[in-house]
Image 1 (cartoon, rainbow, N blue to C red):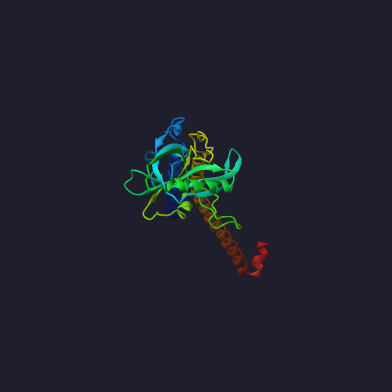
Image 2 (cartoon, rainbow, N blue to C red):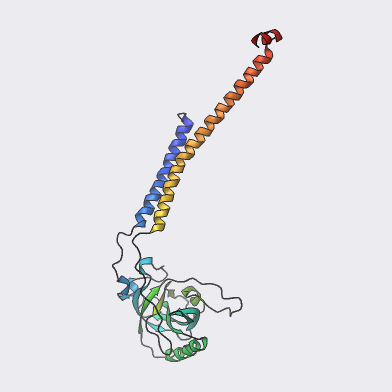
Length: 274
């Protein structure tokens, strides 16, 4: 272990272990939220501009935050999302494209307006909404609800219409919206608190208060500590294997030397040794 090559290997292991230790400390620093949001913060209605920006992901502490937004409904863009449960009853959501008012660039937000127990009732609601929003004279409407992360698009069932959506995904809705060229779109969606008739209000309770401790980050920190220890064990194991191999080679050479010296002796000398 005192040979230059193994001292050099030890120094390399020290560098690797130091990097692993730094990564473990970095994980620990994020395992405990030292500035958690106050209790009930999600129930305070805030302007959407204070919570998220178009194109950005919604931070975990803000999932379920109540927000308000002013905008205009885009007619012809009311779509249905199936497999939506309201108080354990399966049904459908009617969604719409809300074009925000007062923005520098055209900006849209996906909104779940309300719930319907059957597909026919959801389609009837869309016909009513299209008729109401098709008026050439429009005034901005204030919508209040919970801001929720994109659920991610999934392929429709094999026997369903290709346009069928079973997940509330603004990305999937964007693919079916019209007049969206050059429009900024929010990644999260809004679950409206008040549903227009004949839809039913969406049941959207307050999110559970999360713990200040992120156990997954702590687990990762422990993993990095194990990796740092393994770097030293690897150095020890390699040095010991090299030492054992040299010892084995030395013993083999010694045996060969003894055998060669025995074979080179005269018969009488060998017998006298015996």
